[in-house]
Amino acid sequence: MIANALTGKLSLLVDLEKSEKEILDGFCQENGFLLKGQSLTSYDTDCDEVVLLLEGWACRYKILNDGRRQITSFILPGDLSGVRACLFGVSDYETEALTDCKIARINGSDIVNLYIEHPRLAAAITWGSAREEAMLTERVVSLGRRNAKERIAHLFLELHWRLEAVGVTERMAYELPITQEMIADCLGLSIVHVNRTLQSMRKDKLLEYRNGYVILHDSKKLKRLCSFDSEHLEGELHPEFENLSE
Image 1 (cartoon, one colour):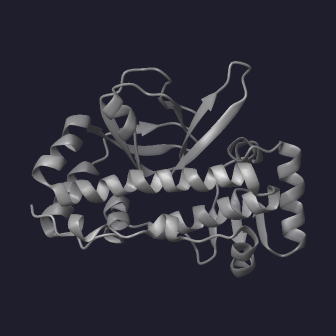
Image 2 (spheres, helix red, strand yellow):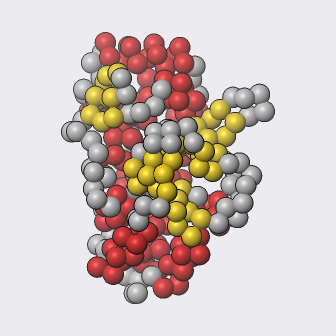
Image 3 (cartoon, rainbow, N blue to C red):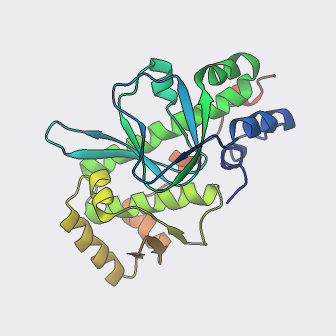
């Protein structure tokens, strides 16, 4: 894994200066630990901090009155969680650790101060929120138009791209510490449908998901299958932001 996942991720977007890297290093000082299953953020609670995930996996979700759950996103190393909740002062979702997690809690005012003192770095961090919006757009397309095989293919390719950016993949394979139930809750499918689709994709030599590990056997075919384009994950910082002075 890249030593500082946040710095590594933002470095793909902008050529960070030494002073900017030092600021990010300050943000990345571990000051918290979550056990698997522990809640990080609860619905409708006050929020005045942003959490940076250093190691592990977490997810954001909402639960309906009848107990049904929709996972809206997976939080991976280098991701900031709670930016929107911090700006609004209250969380409109739940966040749970899917594995044991190391985190860094960042005061919301420190994030706000970046826009005043380090606007270029603030723009780069804002890009992270914009990318999350782009991923949610793709998720809506999946839920509304892609079939089960296409939904799973797109999710697994997207996760591979995000994990590769922070150095935690092994070529076309990676650890996936989530259950089929979580995949179902993310993609709007039943557990039975997920299981049957994964078996079919394994037989077709597209991918294999077993014991918390994913192998993408034919990434090119998977990309064609689900119309996967990593442009929604990459993007480029607008030149006006790139040239902001400190």
